[in-house]
Amino acid sequence: MAAAGGPVGLAFTVFLILAWFLNGAETPEYLAPDQDWTTWANNTEMKGRFAAFFALLAGLTFLPFAGNIRALFGGAKGQDNGRARLAQIAYAGGLIGMTSFAIATVSFSGASAEGAHADPAVSRAIATGAVGPFLVGPMGFAAFLGAGGLLALRSRVLPRWVAVVAMIGAVSFTITFLTTVDGSADGSIFGYGFFPGIVALTVWSVATSIASYRALSRSPDAALAVGASREDPGSMSVE
Image 1 (tube, helix red, strand yellow):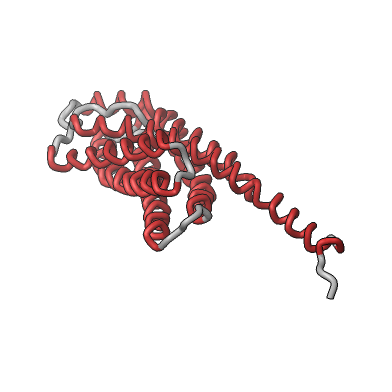
Image 2 (cartoon, one colour; image 1 turned 90 degrees about the vertical axis):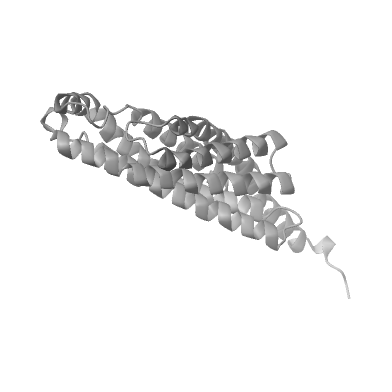
């Protein structure tokens, strides 16, 4: 199971990217005619369904991936209480971010689930209501990347550039919070923080997947080596 850290993390990254881009269709303006909302629902029906499917798969694979990340930094040399707290923050933030993203994507797919037969008022209401979890997701991912980036800088488990990418992603996700202040129902300039945040999250996920695979896959070999030395009669002292 330890060696599965890399494949699970890479699978999460692929599912996340698919869910994000399939769910990337822009909705009509809030006060747009009903026909525009009906046309949008008809054009994005299948994309929304697959986006929800891949979002759920991303959430499922993120659970073991998050555990591997916590184990990766938990096994770093010189672990102290500060780093342990950062590891917990990263783990909790990741769970909040991924759960909120999955809820938002699955809920948003309901806005176009009926296709050409969708009620424009229902589609408009669901799309507007999905804003909440869509912004809670960046809150969790900001904590996930921010704490993870600090851990990478302090423990040197990952290259410094990976830690910098994580910090940039944390700032990008935090910028999206200003969407609530902007109060624009038809899109906000601060929403563009999502894109660099997602890019940073995918780069971070791939890098930590490879690092956790290398670190955790060596554990069984080390255990076998220790066991062999204990069983070797030549290594035992004679009283």
